[in-house]
Image (cartoon, one colour):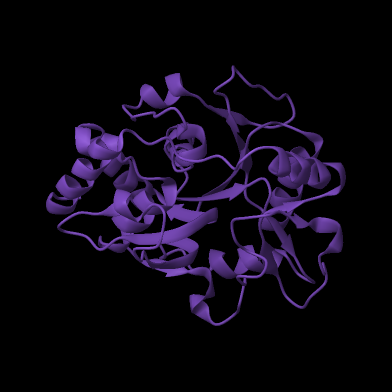
Length: 278
């Protein structure tokens, strides 16, 4: 099936370009950068680029809260879907992901043989009450789900379903108050719909572990065992000066958080959303 690979990044750097070249080579899929363009236009003469900007997303009818470029990674899928209408499957991979091992290309070969799967993700599980984003995924006709979004693959019909849900949510004030992040919106929509959704580790081989694929402090890429048998995914991974700069930045400021509205409004929206359809 025609497949396109997208790399989500905040900026175009030498490291990102090297990653794009590597992933294009091992996946054998055409590769495009989805670049945060909230601070202005971006361009690259060396590789195709899609700017993730408020004007571009608003033109599709998407609600764009102040932190949408961080919160809503799925918006990159919707922009790419229109840029590449002939593609049938899309990978979206964050720039601080690495595939390491004796045969990294095996990951893409393995899943290329499973085109019937509409949605692939890591940690694809029901969202329990302790999950930060759970209240954004409530509805009377769904069970909340969560996943990890650094590496995902969606079919075009899955992208279209998630997009339609975003558009519908944007019409309702209570949903806009508690706007779901990418993990909540995509996982809850697809796991409660007529889609084939699977965790990467559902097929027998183990492609990731909680020790090296998670959200939190970055892993030092120079200290990873880069040659285990097969292939493993790691996230977040940084190297050299980028790793040291990230550690210093984390020590100096808190991690980004979602922008929430007044507590009483959030409480009311949560109650209303739980009683309304997803």
